[in-house]
Length: 335
Image (cartoon, rainbow, N blue to C red; front, top):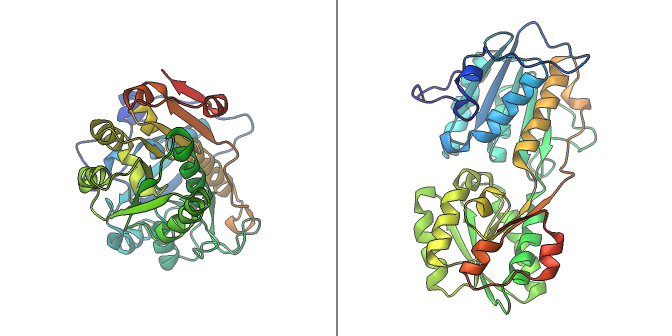
């Protein structure tokens, strides 16, 4: 897989060098008839730390019979959290004439691809509201050359705020970590603000553009006396969940986000969809398109499974007791 400017690392570090060079032959599903040769372009805002979803996507294509180096070529272009680079990268990908383009990260990625091609099929992943963003005409009948998988993060962020108020007794102020580079941020904030008013909780917004400043944002949450920190479900934050968990633990701030990587890294809790599963489902859509399906007729897929993960060890370190009502709902409790 070609990744400009990243010659010293490979997509497949997590799955072994054998797969990286395409010699691990994975069986195709019964009845699968992959193309003689497929080319998939990937356009996103994630950098190296956000490659796990892309790995899951390519692995799933392997399950479906598309083996990189044999009958699959993958070209990846990342804006490295700089959305302004997306238009040029989209044009670069289109010049390679891929059969399908996968876009990931913020909706800007899909929009950039749409602006340079109306014929190459585009499959998005993690879009919050593809209709509002102008990616599709409807979820059932997308129209045009675009379909994909939606994350529903606006609705889920409201539930994550409720989770903070359940776990932290008497909480009155919650700091909200928001991304200035995600065009969906205003909609995510609106959903959380509505939930906060219903819970009579005051929000303190921490908007950052430079993700290297996460430490100062967490420190500010402490300074303003927030009883908890909510990380909005913006794709730019996904690769930074372990770092956020460590910063919050160091500052003794209860933190909740949408990704399991946060409690697995020492944060308090997460509630959301399985991101890797969403990318595997995106691979299924790409497979169908490579076999002749039209994006206009492939309904946008939405999450069907939501995970609540609680880190009881982190709760004890913060002097918190996880309510029984939360533990009973949890899909996993980290002890």
